Length: 391
Image (cartoon, rainbow, N blue to C red):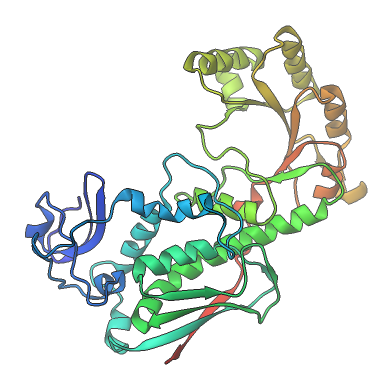
């Protein structure tokens, strides 16, 4: 619970109950769930009314929303993908997108809410806003926008004429949101922020996957995502036609140079990692980063002595050299030699010097995967606008 010194917004949590509320200090200090009164049953009114009167326990709804209900957005894909969001979000044991949206709304609201909307837009005004792509690209994040709008105001009606993964041209309209003009304006920027970011990542991913068509390689992102936005960033990669690398530190052992140095060598690092995974009885794959052909040979020699090794992938790091005179502007001779040495014993992953210009030559080396951090840290957001008309 957040301590309050004046009327302000609090994310009140008691056990598994949670709500974003405007409460006075006396209410905030009580260990009791008191949802705020909602003029139209919407979070928009919580975000636009500072002196929100809390209901008494007797007046409160018979059943408060639960964290499980906040996860309903994910359950939609268990029943079949929504038509406008055919790609399911990647799995994550602790990530709660509904909570991320709540915090983002609270961040936007501050202590006073949307003072511009409050002061200029009549409370009962109704509107209809249209989503417009202002650049060519791949749209993504429609289901996240759904969550933003429903969190702000469950009475808002969102209709999509496009879907995640669609290639759109500048000037294309692909959806509308209808209802309280105040609610639409409160939700507008956060919905667009998610959509523009995810669409930019999906567009960059689609460009790379298109470039390697006809090869067996697959495009991966990395953990170089925005803090707090790991799931939307990686979801956007899937929408763009890519494949997810590990989601976090928990679902794959990745032995990199600092781990090798700390463990006293690549073989001791592998041994320690395998002992740990087996001791924990976890089905966690191991990937080992190699930077030289000698390190590749060391790992392969170890695999010969341990037929039940948990090592499933070798990262071939920076085994490409930028060379304007080479096909695709990159020398992949060392990478090809490493792939030849591995000879299909485990999967291979090329990393380093991966760009839209070099990715085709890298894919033709025979690697299984190509990872590119730029997909989530150096993309260009897709320009999308939301224009409202009064009904």
